[in-house]
Image (cartoon, rainbow, N blue to C red; front, side):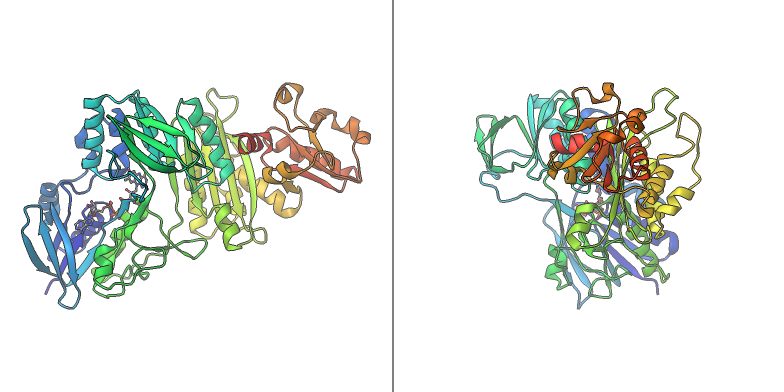
Length: 550
Ligand code: FAD
């Protein structure tokens, strides 16, 4: 007899699982329960509807219950919240919006309830009107509020990708926006110095970015909200958006006695089975194995949720499919820049005590001589011994997506920096350079591994005393004007061989240039002239400046 499969949640993971199940089994009874009004909506597109970049509301609705019925013969029940699971009886309890409650039996149950926006218990949070961004109803409310109330000012609490996307789209609507972020940086998957590039950019777009200052209290004053920050600063806003992060929706699973992990997500095995063999879970609600660190992690992203939906359907249909882990490949548009990352970041590796090495490259997005080339800042993190790639982060305005995807593919196959060198990538001047930025990152990393250059990082130089270390700027006079490391000597690279006698052999020497290339050349010259205590500033001034001065 054919199975009866119930699915809780009808968006990324749930809808993917349902469609795949039907493709694999024409006979199976499949029912999706969705608490809200819509299924399969484009969560990721919601912020762009506020500004009108996405014009048609219907464009956000990728699939409808009627469409699911027609094409896949799937019974979709919207306004239907699953309120309990009875694992012993293999039944669930469903509450409809009209109050009607009933039970439904299952052979297999898939949970894809997602993650809910966090509403921290900050004093006054329940007394003010604030908005979160999770589903179409949320964005309808925000858009309706803007259309009717015409707010002049907004505060977005939280500098993650949802907060930044909202800030950009509010600003585009003419709402003067402030972002309040408790941490010292936006976009937590990036390391600080990469996020620092974004900080500068966000300021230039007129957004007031406040870092290292959380909200202490919310107060209502007439139609406005007053946010009092930990520092005592007060901000007045006509519109308040909470984008503080999300937490897995585990109430159902917990009450059903399913195992919950230490991070607060549902525990599953490689077959995405929970502690009850007939109950599966996917998406933002589960803890996944991080592909690099091997640690349990919460990584709420659409790609993994969709893939897990497909895999769980395979498993239920009797196929041998496994979910091997998440590497957290992600990208976000931050005004004119894109910020992307994959694998582990430096702060995580440091915390876990996993050894790593880092290189920075600031290549051009395409051939320098072709109009429109822009800078692409790439941080590569790798094992020093074998060169296995552990992670990468890229910030730039063009071609960020394809480069991060190249590296993500190599990471997925346990690849090394040598694999990056070997990648044969599509090239013509409008698109790339004959040595693509990804190849370049591989070459620079190899130089470090081979000992062809010894590097220091921006945070090392920040701590150095220029009296004890000889810091040499090898850029041109034009590049140095008004922007240099205090106390540094200036010897342009082309004059370096003529000034060797002025440099100390009994002191550490740090050479730096704009992006690291001439610093490397200077390193090669000096070490071949008997200077043994030389290091090159990795990523040069372009990495150092935003990290130290933003
Ligand atoms: P969801 O897609 O959230 O679906 C869960 C559904 O389950 C919800 O509709 C909910 O109503 C329903 N539900 C919950 N409990 C019950 C219940 N008891 N009964 C019935 N129904 C229930 N990811 C990216 O990779 N890239 C992006 O650019 C990106 N942008 C995003 C932008 C925004 C504004 C948001 C909110 C998310 C974004 N994400 C992005 C994250 C991505 O949308 C999620 O990772 C993905 O949707 C998770 O899929 P899911 O199936 O686990 O949960």
